[in-house]
Every structure is written in C-alpha cells, then in structure tokens.
Length: 399
Image (cartoon, rainbow, N blue to C red; front, side, top):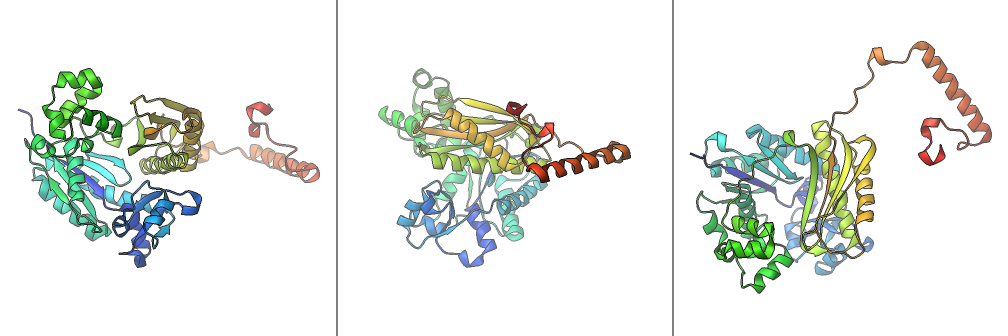
C-alpha cells in the first residue's frame, strides 16, 4: 500500500519588500517597489502589497509602475540582505525535515510525511515560527504532491483582499486534487503558458477541469509529450519526489514568465537575479562550480542550452553573471520572445584547501620570490607598469 505523502509549499510574501521594511520601517504600509531606476529602464523585482493595489507587479518596467502609481517609492535591491534572510528561513525548514527542495530564494517544498502530523498543523506551526522569529510573512499550500501544493499556495494568496499581505494557508485533502483543480483557469496549471492557453481556448478548453475531461490521446496527438503531462497534471497526478540539494549534481535557477518576454533589459536583469541566487546556494553549501549553463525556452517549447567552462571554479555571483550574459548574447536573437530562462552551475566541488604549514614555500623559495618582486617593481617604476608582467599573467593571445 502506497503511503499518501504530505507536501508543503512555502512562499515568502513580498519577500524583497519585507526585508526592506525590516531595514527601513518607515516603508511599512507604503507603496514601494524593489528594482532598477525608472529612468534607467529598470524592472520591478518585488512590489509591496500597497503598490500592488495600484496594479504594480513583479517583472514590470519600473517606468510603467511609476505611471500606475506616481507616489511609488523605488528601492534599490540589497541582495546580501535577501540571501541572509532566506538562509534563516531555510534553516527553520531543515529543522523540521531534511527533505527540503529550495526552488528560489523565497520558495521551497517540504516533505513532512514522516512527522505523522496533519499537514495543516505543520503549516500553521511553521508559519507562526517564521513570523515570530524572523518577522516575515509566508503563505503555504498543503497537498499530496508538489504540483497541487504549489497551486494551492497561489490560490490561497489570490483570495487575500487587495493590498493585504495574504499570509495564507490552503489545504487540499488527499483524493480531492482533481476536484480542487477543476474550476481553475487552464493557465493556472504548470506548463500552460500564453501560447498553450490560446491553443487550448481554441479547442474550447478554458479550465483545468476541461483539460482533465479531454481525451488524453488527442492531447498527446496535438501537444506530444507535453499533452500527456497536461492530462496527468489536470487530474492532480504528480509523482515527482522532493529533490534536495544534497542529491543535486548541479545548482540552477529558472524563471517561467507569465507572458513571453522579448525585452533585453528584463531578460538580463532576470539572469542577474538568478546568478545571485545560484551563488548564494553555492556559498551556503560550501561548493564551487566549474561550468555555467544557460537555458532558454522559446514559445514553441524549443529549449536551446549553452554551457561555458570557467578558467577556475567559482561561487561568486559576478563571475556567474558575466558567463551567463555572455552565453545569452551568443544564443538569443534580438527581440526573440522567451518563455523561460535559467542559469545553472555544474562540476560542483569544495573550494581548494588553504596551504598548510607543510605546503608553505621554503625559506629559500620565499627569498627568491621576494627578489623577483623587487626586480619587477624596479623595472615597472622605470618603464611603466604595463611593460613587464609574469608569464602567468599573460592571456593566450599574448603568449
């Protein structure tokens, strides 16, 4: 007999804004957005719920956000603070179970089946803990699988009144997955973007229940493997396990846009945020990555990937960002609509150990190196700093 799992999806409410409110309490209750400057074609990374009441949304051009809300306060992102707060939240999750799958800086899945408690009770306790100990609000979805738990969170947050922090808990009892999903719009289902939703609407399919009622064979004929996934997901079927970081051979971040994006600034800003999150995960695990991978999905689900091997392993956001942007420039045709974009690192390993006493240069070697440095300094002082360099400092094209 298969044990019914208890999966919880945790989503921190207006996370970047919540952290900024802790840094500057005068922001509480005010319409503000975290992101780039409007005059610099910046993009909204996060909007307070007071700003959302005016229609301001994440990934929106900041200039448009200011037009919707002229009193909008624009706050520059402080990613180190977000990473620190995220790590504190994840520590609370790991205190409950080792089966934690962090999917972004402010979202994670937990498998709490082994606790033997009702999922709603665990969710309530976890929500209260994060609120009292960290001062952060979160919304949670509880279900028997990841798919339904994630959608439950979205439904719970959507039921909050406009301008209010949701702090929601939505529970879907086992065996009621299909009933819960049925009345929701087709676009609420994972894998249904604007193009797929448009095609489904042309078939008279408007809700998830409509997808579930449609013959699976026809969905497969029209959409291929994606059609089979749609048929299963519409019935609330999802057997994917929790994938912990300990099991991962790579670390990555992906973003699926609600609407296809063709704006370069917005795509590059998304890559920067993802690279920062990947770097934070590497640093938290004490790992470095040897390769950076870019993943892009076009509206027709074609998904090119490109990979770049670094000169040396890294856990630095700047290095990962630079590599990702270089791959992006090589891959993306100007104005090509993008459905999904992601950054990952692979070739994971621990940083090189520091030199021990036994690895230190001998006294003779230290004297030789000191004399070499003095000679270099003397020549550079006479002829210019760029004239003489060590061979190890030369690029391939200079050798």
